[in-house]
Length: 382
Image (tube, rainbow, N blue to C red):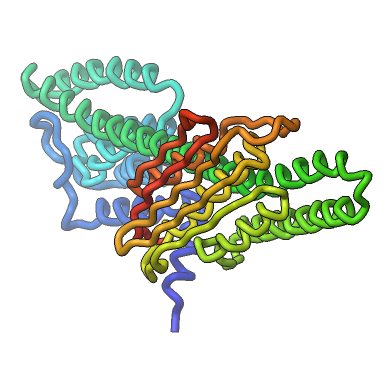
């Protein structure tokens, strides 16, 4: 059995001139058949001339250059035009005359350079051709001359329209590709920010606290152990993220079910956290679970940065159609130095929630502290 897909693939890999050659040969053969003799384009009233050896040369000159109409459109158009002129002057009126509008369409669509020069040269050659035909007795009226010229202009215009359409489509695809790449870069940046910032912030806060525990070796050892554990988790999460970037990897992403681990890690970093869950995640929660996890993670990271030691409350409520998250601190916490923020985290969260059609807010409380709230519609596929 012949594999048609393989044949099509081999055909597409052939040079464009090779793919255009069969049509040129077919038109040549049809033009030479007795049934089609004298049935081509006829300018004026010159009596048809029987085919001879010169007719074969003229027909070949009209048809065979169509094989290069896309590779060398200017050369192909000039040769076809020359053959058409000889066809009319010798009154063969061959079917090969249809090659001229085809060559004009191809040149209008594929010619990149010298378009204006080609148009001017062919237009300038048109009037002398009409004058010679008139002297030979064609007796074309000015209206007929103008009408045929407009037909040729229309063929060129069709090719030019195809060219502009193709260019517009290529530009659209370029913009789509750039937008896709930019969106992918932003997504990777958000993932890196979410994964790295939480762990690194916890390590910095724990390391700062260890400075004041030199007089309590047991507590110092526990704090340093927590720093080590946090660093190991950071390395594990980074490896997990790098695996996710591989096209052939199919590892799951964090969900709301991992919130207990996240809260416990924050507690080990010295942040008092109260965690409350209401309801159970719906099976169709999809991306909503992942976004809820990221909201809690970023809020706890900010609590470690700007409200270290202050009581933090995390509330997650699972509904049938949405997940609501609220994370707040009671006050500004200790005044120990904390790593600065870029502001990218909250902006990224807002984008994530907005993408699912939800609502997000982050604001300071009147008595100190801050509160982060998110309403995330459930049911979006992950």
